[in-house]
Image (cartoon, rainbow, N blue to C red; front, top):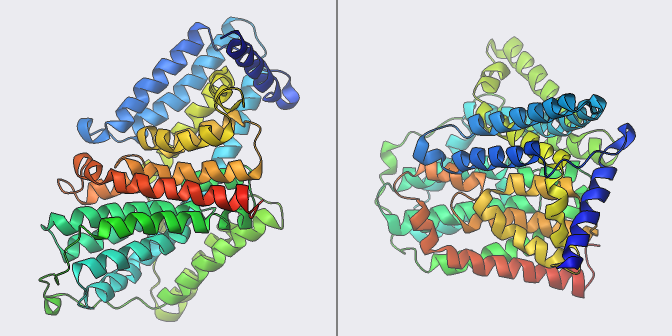
Length: 459
């Protein structure tokens, strides 16, 4: 017990001292009224985030309130006690820069996705799938594989929303197909997002924080796909093998708008620009994304000149889920405030080899992600910044992404699909098959261990 307390004290002082940058050491105000108050506000706010379906309150509201109000309380505490206000100002500036990198990256990605939706790219994909005459089990596999490989580019939430729409278009009542199919899409989207720096908000956060290069994340592909395939193989045994009763003649064959294929190509090129900006030019990844946005706007201008009508980028921007962006802002601000106060220094003690150590702590992050949501958990780990090698940073990226699938509301993809299939894909329905996801999670971690610790590949 004495050893644990000494570790707690040392971690708190060391992390607070390292967090102040040029402005000097940050005082530890964890066990003060503002420290306790901030923690209580965060817990209450996150309760309402988790209970979004019950209270019908947008998750961005409590997150944004907590993130902004806690920092204002900290500033008030500093002013009240005559402390150095420059510390508050400097920490707030650093946090704004961190959030801005993620905020604008997502903003551009969402704009591209909305533009492709407007140009009927995904309508065409949906029609092509349902017109093939596949059995339920074949559709289960096709939608899952598509989710796994679209997610690394389009992000896990967007991918899950698009493919769950395909499910409900094909079948509206057969839960024997819809429930395993929905779970399959969520697991595939999260697993696919885990091996791409921009497939999930957690991987994007780790990448922009410099915890690994673009190529480093690609080494997670074996662990991601093998774990997913194991879960999918077990789940598929519960899916019927008959052909859905679907009349394709009643469905419109959508035609993509002029320039849709160019927009797809520009989207891929924009991702390339983001990677080059971050890895080669040492600019923030969002710089390349914003350059890609300028190309999209220029192409819209060209279409208007050539055809008299474009796709109107500003219309696409207006359709972006701003509540999602506000939620990320609020959560990242709140976690940043808890770090500033000193709480995350105490949480980081579990990474000490004499407590749990990095491997078991990072495996535990996966289970915590399922309960709390992977975004604040990953943000907390990055803020605490325990001493870990590349292999451990890749492990926590993997577990935070894949672990979010264990519970229906543990990831943005799961929450999105619950909204698309209300009354069908529910918490209870998901938990019935959660053991299959747990098996895949264990397999993913085992593959990581064999790859990084036994073979030494990916270091």
